[in-house]
Length: 400
Image 1 (cartoon, rainbow, N blue to C red):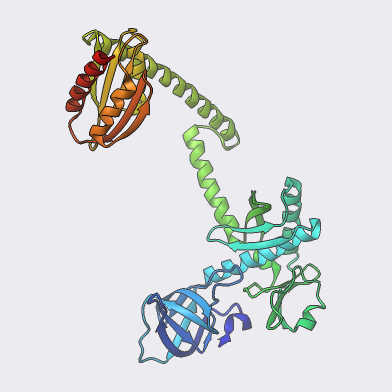
Image 2 (cartoon, rainbow, N blue to C red; image 1 turned 30 degrees about the vertical axis):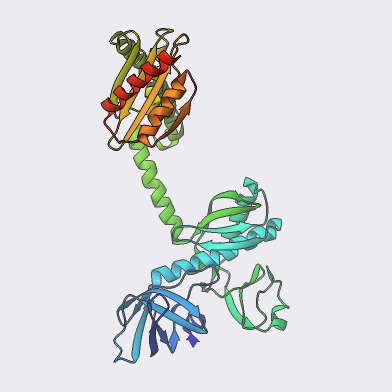
């Protein structure tokens, strides 16, 4: 198959012959052509998209010595000639990003000897993994500065097919993974690298490189960056976010960090105040529930309360009297939960009571003689469970 994207990466449309169509083992339709300008996924660069006779090409893969163009639907089988059109914006973006990766990787290696061991070209950003454990800020800034200087110099980017012997004459940035069909991508006096991707004809077409961030990934440093038109996209996105934040916080851009810090601090203070108010309300509720009890056992059925609130309520109520017994039930759509507690001088065993209740619910829980909790399936109403619990509490108390 003739690979037009190697002959001229700027080809956007082409005419060729349809060799055949088939389906893979996942029943996805693909077409094989006599020649193609569609770049298949490989070497860290994503596949091209576009159309064949107006039918959308959704994926391109090289397999079993052929390039498969995966289609949205089957091409008309009665037509042998095919008109292909590349999504040029996508292709040129990939060319910018891939060439930018070569330049930035070479800059890190030339300045500090940091080797790139992997590369990923994503939809919005791209990354390289450097074979180091730490990346000083100054080193990232200097590598970015050198990379942009190389771009500004508008050096030629040359792709050349060479033999293994010819390749050995160049100062390659990394060892070749093949011994035949070697394709070198070269920026004179700066970078010489084996690569099968598509690239612009000069560094100036990359337009720029901006390092966004980096983080440690196992024993390596992953650097995130963008090139070319993606820099403007990032700038526009961040500008919109900054503008919206300025309006929301009623602060100019340069004051956003301090305004956000004040907002966060105020939020924390409000959360503390709210928590204190909740605690006060629970304490008041506990006194009311205890006062409404019969003096020996305090009980109530709730709907939709959190188990954490029930735990606090039970402890607060139990603290009202050393002889107190507290049984609280929480009812949801399909679950029943309970909390039971007692005062220090009560003869009831909450752990034993909980074990009996859990059998009625096919539930799980646990605790100790002073405090226990659990929950399970709603096999009865909350009120029925409470009445059962009160009978058991009386039996357990009399036994003790």
